[in-house]
Length: 334
Image (cartoon, rainbow, N blue to C red):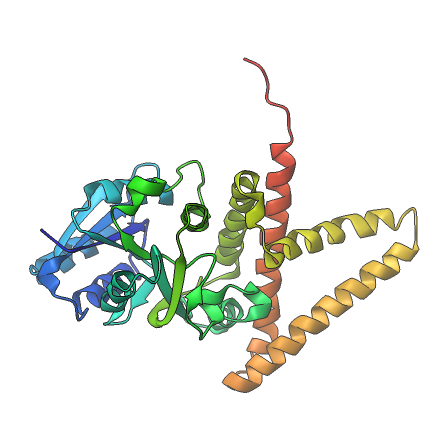
């Protein structure tokens, strides 16, 4: 029986799934004690073929695919959990590339009692070629882009609100339940919130590292962050105390961008306030982009990073507001 079950939700990940499976195969943990369960959302590209090819080429790794017809990440995770045989669960993403000691370090932190769920830091890399993909990766690794999301920027070990993916004992689900399938995103944060409410600790160890491939286009980035923002409000309705300052700023900024121009029709001074806000925001983005461009010696980041950060902020904020607004609609009686 395997000691570790690695669970991976995915859909149409032909460009990254082989890299992930190769990274798991190269772990310094005994391969015969690892099983990998991929919950696939009925991929329409060559994802399944690439998984099957890897299985053929690496028969020493226990690897299986289970169907996730809903294509929703929490449902896929729960299906994988139900099939898992291991004592430890290590959740990974098809966009990730764990270091060779990833599993070993996760289990060491769990065995040391650091937390009920432990995770590490992302080394964010471009998800594709070109200056836009490079700009998105740089923005996703900068505090101005992601606030105080410690798993993107921290070098200190300690308790945190959430970790990316995470590793935990399988018995944990009997204490706090499985992933919440009513949320189509933010399921990790909600899972970790229940851990903390139950008296457990979520532990971040910067020694646990993985490469994460950011989105490759502004359109993909906008859809990703809109999904985050929309489902964040759904989660906050259940756990309002979990709101953090960095999560409140994007919807407040987006709301001001909507209301100040309209209110300025009545009170013209608000048009000046809006202009000052926008100029200050653009200057802040350009200042951060200049430092990043100088550090990486890529002048294209001076344009790309502000575009990426603005896409992240506005997509998240507007989707959050839309989620809030639609939740206020009275339900029709049957």
